[in-house]
Amino acid sequence: MILFNKIITLTKIIIKIKIYISRPSQTKILVYDRVSKRFADAFFPNKSFSFYDVRYESINLYVFFFTLMNCGIKNFKINYKFNYFNFIKPTIVYTSIDNNIGFFKLKKLYPDAFYIADQNGIRDNEFYSQCKKFLKKFPNYNLSVDIFFCFGNNEKKRIKKIISGKIIALGNTTNNNRKYKKISNFKFKYIMFISSLNIQNFKSDVKALKISIDYSSKIGKKIYFLDRGQNNNFQFLKKNFDMTKIEYLENDKSNKEKTAKKLMSRNALAVFSHSTLGLEALSIGVRSACFNKNFHEHYIDKNYPNTGPFWNNNIDKKNLENLLDKVSNYSSKEWKKISQKYSNQLMAYDYNNKKKKKYLKNYL
Image (spheres, helix red, strand yellow):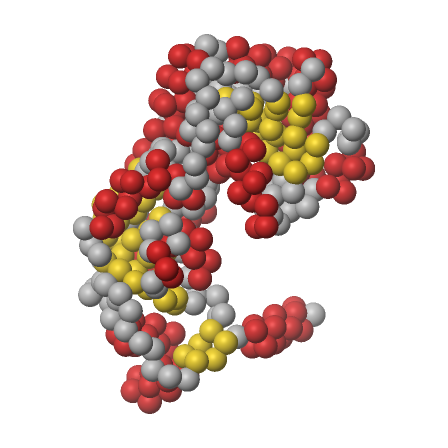
C-alpha cells in the first residue's frame, strides 16, 4: 500500500512537471522556490526574475543532459543545481522559504551570488533542530546566507546560532507592504478570532473560541472567525457552534487581502494562539490577546512568564475574559508602548519595506 501511494504521488508529479528544452538564459535575480513569488513581487517589479523550482514543478532537459554527460549519476541533484546556477549566473538568489536547509547550503555550492532569505512564517523547533543535527554531523560545514530578514529580535538570536550572515529583524514582507488606515483612538467594535490550522485538533483553540463567543455576546460585540488559509473549518463550526453568534471568514488566496485588512482595523481585538497573522496585527498596533499554551516553544531565547500584558497561558473562562478586558481597556498610550515593545521582539514593522528595499538596493 505504501509503495502504491508513492507510485501515485510520483505519477502526479510527472504529469504536472513542465519541461524546458533550451539552455536557461542568464538572469540577474533568481527566486529559489516558486512559492516565494508573492514575497519576491514586493521587491522585484515587473517580474524581473526567474525561478529555480525545488518542488519538481519543472525540469530543464538541456541542464539535465549536460549534467548527465559531464558529471554522471553520482551527486546528480547537486550537480544539476550547480550547473543550472552556472548557466544563469544570478547576482541575487532570493527565497521566502526560510526553513529550507538546502538554501543555506547554496553559498558553498555556488559562491558567486548574493543570497537573501526572507522569513514568511512562525517557526517552531523543527527547522532549528534539523540545522543543529546537520552541523553536528558535519562540524566543518557552514550554513550561510548574506542577508536573513527575520520577524523580530527573538528570532534573530536563535538564527545566529545556526546560520552565518547578516541577520536583520524587519518583520513580515507582505504585512509591511500593506497600507493600513491610521486610527488615533481605539473604539472597540468587534473581536477577530484567528484560527490555528484545523481547529478540531487544538482543544485549547476550541475552548478559547467558546469563551470568546460568550464574551462577545455578554459585551454586545460582534465576533468573526478568520479561518486559516486552505483549512476549511466551516463544517466543524457549523456542527459544534451556534453560527448565528459568529461570522465566518474564509481566508483563501482570492480574498486574503480583504480579510487581512478587515482584521487589521485598529478598532478590532485580535484573539489568537500561534499565528503569524496575529503577530502582524500586534506589529501595527491592533489590540491583541494571545492564549498560546506553547508560547515558549515559538519564542525561544526569551523567558516569558505564563501571563503578560497581552497573553495568558492558563486558558479558562475567568483568565481569558480578564485578558480580553485588560487588552481592550488599555489607554491608547499604554497599548502603543506595549505593542511597540513586543513587536520588536516578535514581529517588527517596516512600513512599505523601506529598510529592506534599502538593503537590497545596495546589491542590485
